[in-house]
Length: 406
Image (tube, rainbow, N blue to C red):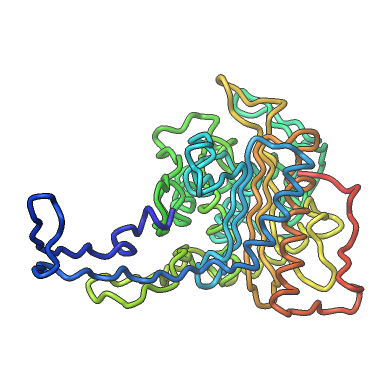
């Protein structure tokens, strides 16, 4: 991808020499005139950290063998600078023999493919309602026992919840509760906040093939869309867009510019590669409130119990999205996702794990969260950031194997 994007920068310019040849085509060494000197290509330095990339690929392989999914993507990013520290996809291919592999395998799925985000999108809905001051964290909502008839359709929760406060709507990932939150602000306001996060737009990453995603304008929403969009249906996002969204909560409310080029040497004054962004999309108050909730998602009571690591405060959100096929949502094909960042006190990395059509288990909290956990743990050790407590012995991670959910 990088070589394709920056081929002109890497290749430089070919030199031209005028020579004379005899009747047999042999070059006459006594004559040679340089028409144009060759220009050496520039060196490009990537933001990719070789060690973190190795960790990601190793942990992806374990998940791949366990769940045999259709495809899988992982991104690790510095949520403050936008530097991509690792990015990998499966199935993968040998770059030295690309012709031996299907074209689909050679795509960077993290930037070229769309998926309906499902419950990871609830962070946007929750942020919007908080920003508009339409809810208090202690406010109770009736989640209808997990089944709610609204606008001609039945909306389900994965589990039958009754009354839940705002916090637990997110902690338990209630679809019904989230839609009731969205109804407080309405279609246009919700859409405006989704646009604040720049969904439906290119991130501008310095890689080829990026797509915008799908976000229909409100005038093209159906009457039922307000019950679907808030929970991550009827929208299409890339993995890169999703990890940029969670990074907003890790850096105080700012939208970062993801990038994979660290520097180009020697620099070219005619091309300035700037990746800073100062666009604040949500307030620090909203960030603080929602992060306290996202930290409880990654706890014994939350859907991301299996992402917990003793001694580190992790914020995150699970997603288990039914795939839309042949005009309806499948009951057998899912996309399991987890996005999160750590440590809460001073976030060093955000991680996205996206697993398309895992076999057997399919909840994001079961399939994707453990991959996050292993990558996060190993990267913290690599960064030499110790846990806050002494409860971790020799790198052992809490065993939450039997926990489940969205």
